[in-house]
Length: 311
Image (cartoon, rainbow, N blue to C red; front, side, top):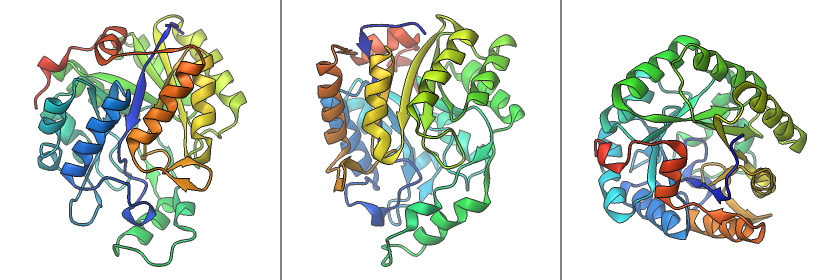
């Protein structure tokens, strides 16, 4: 791992797992997503990881027109790096998942590095009165769908979005095997360093939120990529801040946001994405890490710059 005193803070603003019933802070409308993203950047996030939602129902949408209702506002409001999802949701086709990124040509996009079970049905527990009729079935249905990220689909993303648009990637690795998948594409010259390897813990179907797993994944990534990668890591739900601390002490970068956890501490819902970013900035500073600015993050990740995007 290439270590740096500068820690990149990413904020995943809204995602596609949590639903509007779960938290009043979850941004749904384009204006709410834009405002939440800008406030997170003001709090210290250098990277903004973005999904879109139907503004009426909160249902995850891949529609590039919806993305274009908040991306220009974010670009005017902050110089933070925009990271567009290509994961979308398990209900979307690959064509749908790529549509917004291909149109907007972001500096950075997420890329899931393998097919997997991605079960978030347990998140439906404890709720009886739903704001929208789709929410319960959407959550419960996740236990019977494979989240497909085949080698052919990954190659298509690397070629069409990477080579075609100059976009670089946040390589999302939910298990050790995903690191080897990335190494395969690196060996073929389709994935090019420096790699931003985002290790993800605590998703049911992926590697568990055990700190030994983070240590092991770093060991394997070091063998596969040497100094050609930057580590970032996060865990879902109640494990969020513990893994932030662990990644930071290892010299890595971190991600927080309402996509990954709706809480600021045990039993207390976060008021905003910015509140989580503020907390992690304090934590990193106490650990002796400096917070990377967007331009410092661009240099570390070898991004094309905000002038090369399509929004």
